[in-house]
Image (cartoon, rainbow, N blue to C red; front, side, top):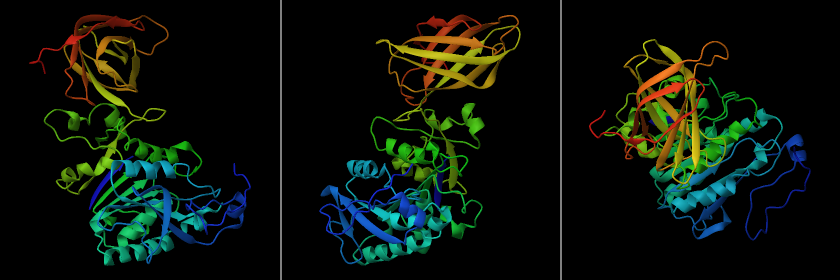
Length: 421
């Protein structure tokens, strides 16, 4: 199977789910989380015929469900306060905006709501059985496993994996959004989401510690996925053995002309499955960076520098781009100090929060990081800026520069000669 890795409660009353004109996600109180809740799974269908008003469906009542179309199940995870996921409505609407499909929200809040994580975790297999029974009926009505897509968040990722196991990995796709770590890390494949659970699996890891649920990085995976559904933000990931190698620009061949395209994060990740089929085993890790705020996109450039200093210089480069309208974006390339040797090209990977289509000015600052002692010069024979996010854009060059340490040098770039490598 194909797999791609992208590495306060308020007390309130419980509303009845019955007799709702537009059924809503189960809303529970913190009190419910303290005393615990019994499992009850509710399936809510959204289609382009009922974009904002869900239909509660089950094995005998399909509502607007069209079994000939893709069906996407959205499965949430641990809910320690009983509140609905704040991202759910946005995710449903965004999915339906990019494709005419069935979107089924798997509401197992009665079961996921508890302050004791282990209690919620123990119910995941039972939720999977409910979904298996429903999908079985879909298949009877003419659905295809190829068209079943499951998006699982936290514990929901493992629920999706359990469903996939019951179909021997024949589900079309599973996306795991920061799969829950506690009680699952280190477990055998049958006890967690595994590469063999679907025809294509992509996983976004955004929480490195795995233990602190309320940290924003755990939910960040959902918002990164959401950004992929918006036309103004495409997050590119780079297959690599380690984050260090990625940050040092050693793993960006897929972004070069005449090379295999890089995998995209989120909804369109499965566009890369044709390439994965050529790998043995057919799985890989890919790394990426994000901005601090929505829509989180980072735009990558290579900064190629050839120096002619007699002595070796080590230090970092800060680069700022400015367009004709005066907009600026800056990148401090200081992951590891670069080593500049005479007539040797150093290629630095720069990351910008903004995409400036037409760069009118570039500024560079060289720093050794030393606060005392002499100030050094970096003598540049040539600097070249080339976009990885938009490789079709012509690279920009400048020749014969001298950078005084910790002093900004601003210049206007020119188009590089076409025959230049």
